[in-house]
Image (cartoon, rainbow over all chains, first blue to last red; front, side, top):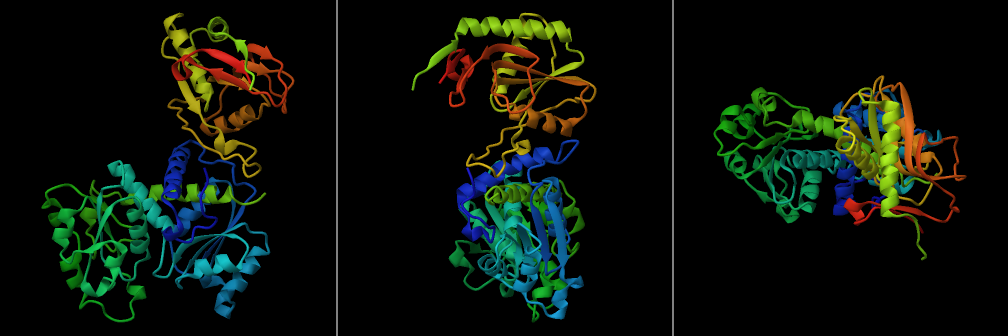
Amino acid sequence: MELSVSHLLGIKYLKKEDIDLIFETADHFKEVINRPIKKVPSLRDITIANIFFENSTRTKLSFELAQKRLSADVISFSTAQSSVKKGETLIDTVNNILSMKVDMVVMRHSNPGAAYFLSQNVKACIINAGDGAHEHPTQALLDSYSIKEKLGEVGGKKVVIVGDILHSRVALSNIYALKMQGAEIKVCGPKTLIPKYIESLGVTVEPNLRNALEWCDVANILRVQNERMDVNYFPSTREYTQRYGVDKALLDSLSKEIVIMHPGPINRGVEITSDVADSKQSVILHQVENGVAIRMAIIYLLASKLQQ
Amino acid sequence: MSQKVLLTSKEVNIILHRLACQLIENHLDFSNSVLIGIQPRGISLAERLKTILETDYNIQNIPLGFLDITFFRDDFRRGEKQLDANITQIDFLIEDKKVIFIDDVLFTGRSIRSALSAIQSFGRPTEIELLVLIDRRFSRHLPIQPDYRGRQVDAIEDEKVKVCWKDKDGEDAVYLI
């Protein structure tokens, strides 16, 4: 069994069988990262470059750890300290790195489609670690994996994505992935932050937070993406929190215990309060652990398609 | 495709008992020894041996683990063969214990080489021994030999040795295909 794709550019390009294979492989790597020596030698002849044109803590560390656990050689590059500031183009940057014989590139860039553009123009396996407000496939895969771990399966489950859907690549990738696995999806947030034709993706809009949480089995809570906002999408952060922030009182008042997820970083007190983020219903830290296993699985499966 | 019987059900049974006795000779009550079945096909043999040791020779509580070697293979990205991993489950410490690897057929020795690398992720055993049901003599690619062998077989490269177990395939038998 192998993946049907040679790059990971977005969930949109995957098939359901690919997702199943990634999850099965991630199960094995989850066991590996709990051993005394958390390494396997499979990728010791592979070099991977992590190129992050946008800030990241979680994703970058997670990828680096996954690559090192597979014994790959890792070089990391972030634009703060680079020639991009001197005006070097994207293709030039990457080609310079590739001429040092790098086999795979993990890239985060602020332009949607940057990863796709790269895959058409350079000779390396490309993994999209987030391209603008478009896709963040590894996040969606680890989110679904975490739901499967907590609830047994994703098919038939009701998932609500709460918050800034308009600017969120996590939301879009999650919608594609959850739909492919047969989940039902609602989105909930201020009207100004819900894309106009989102229902064409097969999701419904629920403007009221309480109704959305009452309906769902899982709530994936997103951060407000201030850095992508060119205008004010809501009157004040306080008003956002009052209408769309999840707090313990709201959670406890629901008729069943729902699962709380958040891709991070959390703005405690804005979209989610500390007692919710740290509650036993929250799988936020499991998402982080699963992230390493999922990324190991993806890198391993893509590497196995690289020619010797 | 012609199929030659190498071991009948009766012969397999006698060999399993003989192997069990050989293990007892060297490991006595297994207080310092553990059995590790190599995935995927060493598992049935390992479980059978443990059952025989428990029921027929009254040695209880022998630690049994399963080791998958997929990520330690030396042919990753080198062949057409797709690698499907199985579970690894070693719920005990192997530090300072005697480890007995159990596999059904010893052929080139590469699986055992991978297992020797893989087991190091779990600790440092005092010693490692190898038990196989079928030893395909003269087929080794590496300097690896078994400590306990069921039957030695001379087979040419293209032939395959197939081991069947009662619980999975309905009978205990070994065929040369």
